Image (cartoon, rainbow, N blue to C red; front, side):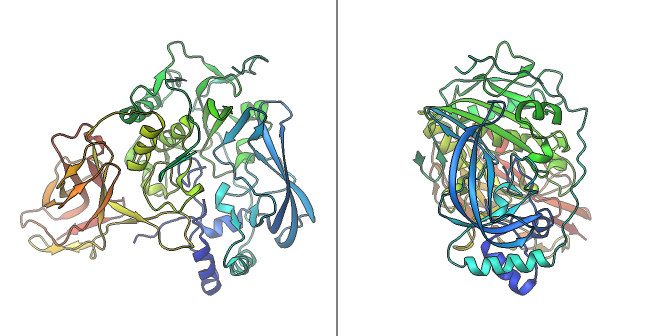
Length: 517
């Protein structure tokens, strides 16, 4: 399995007692799409306050500008691993419910009164919309093995120096709509494997990005992508506004609002929200139903529509992945790991940047069809160059495991094997009988131009709607006439009746190559 900067798990925290460092963090703001992943050392280095505390109380109120509901948690400190937190302090999180109004932000973490937590926190003297570092990455609830987790965290914190705050510079080339205060009268659970609360009413009319934005009309394309499975779910406003405000009952893509706009509306900057936050979906409910959702992306991050750059470890982030994820929140979909051990793939999962593919998976398609029946009857298969699974009872996020050649080199006329399977999914509503997968060498990722066919695989059996199947590729022979060079692996799900072929191709990760000699 390739080395990944993932999220920190209780299983790996226990391992830190031997390694003196945490390898990963698997505790559930994206990190899937909207929160950049942090290594264990990055988590510790970014947390000036680390405590074990019990939640003694919870109270919901409006913020000072009366634009967003906030929840104040009263915590009693039992142990300080770092920092000088007082014995009792208040931790404020965005979102909450007052009367028939509920506000949600996708970086929010809900705390339960009476429960003990290990918390990696920011500076308690600064305002914040995400006081827990890394959103859900920095919280561990008391359960079996909690003492060992705290001990491991203590070791990690003692061996990791606190890093200075990173300098965040906004990209002036990324436009945002102008924020305007809403008028005073502007306000106008199902569990399969997926989870959503009462969704918005169909159709959802969205104010898109302005035509001059470098990411227009990509935002509209991602709305249309959800419509592939839900029919007339999203529509683009016929008279879009170039202004936005949270609390005006308008579903809006705000663009990339700068610190001044965020401060005017919420009295916090992007740094206060969290330096690793890519974007936020602000959702308002009335009597449980979504009546407004606004999406804002962080202008201090680099963004791209290029899939190659977006799935490299460095470089810009995928606009398509983040927007597709946030649109899921927009209609009411939750992160799958919030209430269950979610081993499956989803655009709502937290994952490494190398898997930011902007793809709607079987779980997501099932969810939106369930929320907005009858959905769209469609024949649609999907292939991925990796598998996902749930390792054990201590893991809280799915493990993403790419199929990698056991040797990075092969001779023309020789062969190679992969270290693990790939996967296919039935994203549609029609059973797929004996699906066929083709394996290629490709000169360039996300393209089959110049591809060399290596093998055809017929998967025996029928894949029911919503099902996922691991596919063992077996030994692969390299044709004798393949020119020497370095290639990536490509996979194609061959189905002439497939109604959405855009997800029929998959490519190995940027660092998963085969050199033919």
